[in-house]
Amino acid sequence: MRPFRISVPASSANIGPGFDSMGLAVNLYLTLEVTESEKWEFTSPSLSSNDNFQDHFIFQIAAKIAERHQTTLPVCKVIETSEIPLARGLGSSASAILAGIELANQACDLHLSSEDKLQYGTEIEGHPDNIAPALFGGLIISTLTGNEINWLQAPALDVDLVIYIPNTELKTEAARQVLPDSYTREHAAAASGISNLVVASLLAGDYELAGKMMEKDMFHESYRSALIPNYDQIRKEAKFYGAYGTVISGAGPTMISFAPKGEGPAITEPLQAILPDYHVSVMKIDMQGLTVEQ
Image 1 (cartoon, rainbow, N blue to C red):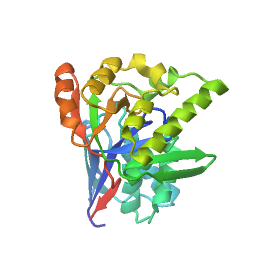
Image 2 (image 1 turned 90 degrees about the vertical axis):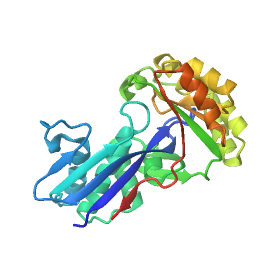
Image 3 (image 1 turned 120 degrees about the vertical axis):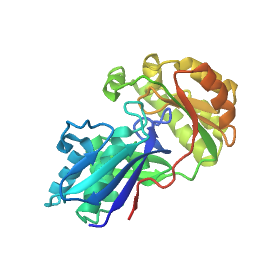
């Protein structure tokens, strides 16, 4: 087996009203350096020296994919590094799932197609909104109907992203629990119209309208906002300093602003001063998605 390197970007799901159907890849990365070895070694920030490599989530995903193809993983040395914070709404689980799928694909020579990886990842994750952008890169609109996944990669967006990552975690399960079990027809129709207009305005390059409509989400943000530290302040201050709009990243607590190209630093500097316990930075949209180097 030749050594290889897997890189998977972080992702920001929902983009306001694109609930469970829209996601964007960003330039924070989970990386695996893999070489053949005489014994299994898995070096990871999430594993202590006393932990067994078989307990690692990425290994477990890889082993399941290998088993699905009636084979076993060869013995490897895996060195994991990650820039993606856990439980912050930046798709850390989706990135780990794809890393595990690709580890099995490369190590076992499975020749999986991109659609295979999308299908496997979605089955494990439950929906494709983080999996698809982490796999393909860019802004992806996707939907799962039955067992069929349909998706579209939008043209590259001419914007800066400003990301506000707090020190606190928020588990997706907790963020899901505050959502209603159902919506009235009128509510669902209005919420869908807002989501449709966000997509249309992004595709048309009307970022002013997109930002305005992002902040009018009716599917999840109003219910989750109480769980997000400084939610109202971040939206207000980001708008004051020039952002088109600011939304919760995934289930939170990270938030993300869309800003005019080149104007991200003008938002980042004052917001970092206002939010000293946050990591505030200008990010880029990753347009490549999962990559493998050999």
